[in-house]
Length: 205
Image 1 (cartoon, rainbow, N blue to C red):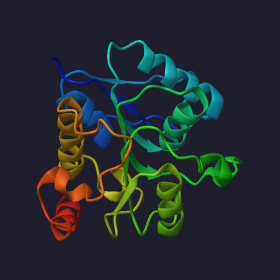
Image 2 (image 1 turned 45 degrees about the horizontal axis):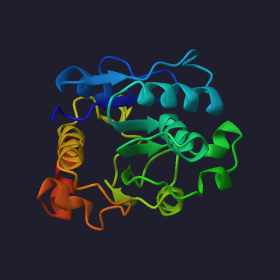
Image 3 (image 1 turned 135 degrees about the vertical axis):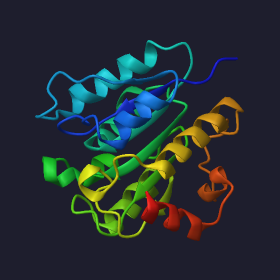
Image 4 (image 1 turned 30 degrees about the vertical axis):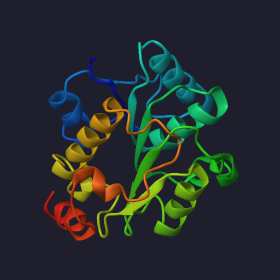
């Protein structure tokens, strides 16, 4: 069986060539980007429908790798349109209220598992709000510590830890370890490492 595809779901402004999402797209096979009509003016319904169309064009459920506003659109696609993803990695979601969206819109549990990677120094979303999003979606939340918005500005161009998480989640998807809708209780096991090693890797990458 072939590997599950990886769909990169950037946030507002798209992810430039030095962003970790673009590097993952270049490095990992069968990885492609969901394109949006207007990268500078996110529209939840339009962005979510484009994600839905990209997923349904594939022959098997993919792994979504979303960042910032892309996280909101990735979650909304699943709850509003039943987008048949395999799993989702949410990295540094944006605060819905910054875009005039009620947080209650993102409180519905997702049918498929995932992981939310957050930071306690993210200017776009507090850790408390990240935990609330994760709880609403029914996914595990991992705090990378002082990692900003987990983008180029915060030093996350080439991001080895992120690449390892993506590869581990795809491997788990390929091995049918995500067959149930129950999110993994201990996400650090996806990397076969300890929580303190996650933090160390974040600081190094």
